[in-house]
Image (cartoon, rainbow over the protein chains, first blue to last red):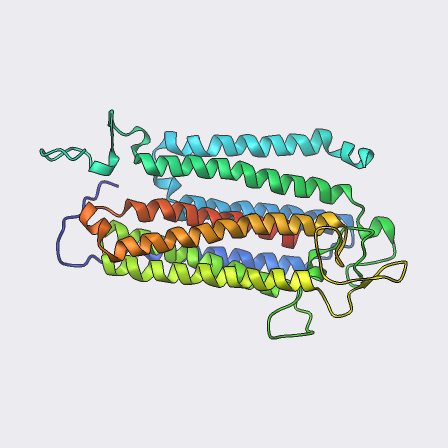
Length: 110
Length: 253
């Protein structure tokens, strides 16, 4: 982080290898999602929920790479990382709790 | 703000009260906080989508013998996305489930990479590279918006045969009251969620154009840093991130 750049006329070499790697990872995960979408049958309950869990898992893997590498959150100071991550964790917690404890009711009231 | 003696911190990292908290500039921190609030908005939208979706019967509840292969659209139950989104421009009449939306995902991820390359070029204070990658990002943004416009147009106009209701009436395409794909709520959520995301993409493209304009005119070169590229980059990556979630919950699940 502490690399101060002098105003030299000489162009610096781009450091982009890591970024392109993340791009290929994201693309590969999306390809895997497509394969899952068409290869695992949803006709039985097991396949259906396996698919949904895999999709959600892979989505979080993708968002980890986007937020961590593209948005540089991994390289920020710890307090910055937690400032962003903790509220999001609360949202996920809220969602999980809602689905688990209250999810059944919506079927009854409709 | 500018101090004559060389300050320990670069100017954009110095707040009025002194050193910046969390070692980020004011604008960048506020962009993060804004994106956090936007996360709540999109979470609320996707959570309500999930809740409403699972409160409707699936086709298995209505017609136990139907499978994913023999699935047919009806307003009685929630549709499965691969039977709704299967059209691709210039390939009329072919069933290519999720191919077009996969292409849109690719475009957005790619434009995210070009954006991060622009940010990287900004760290090197390489004006020419910033301009080049910002242009690619803007192009990607326009391509995505164009694709979404086509997707919407196709969704609204619907298929040639439409959907025949029990009373013999036909429904073509979609509006807010009824649609040929499923319950009214399905199209309503489609319009609202993808529309809200598309509005974000549009604002992102406008911001990117402003940054490109400023970079080209040497505003950031004179300022001595390219932090504005970083801030708008954060926003652009966030738009990509939201699409990853919309893609999963609207098109895959």
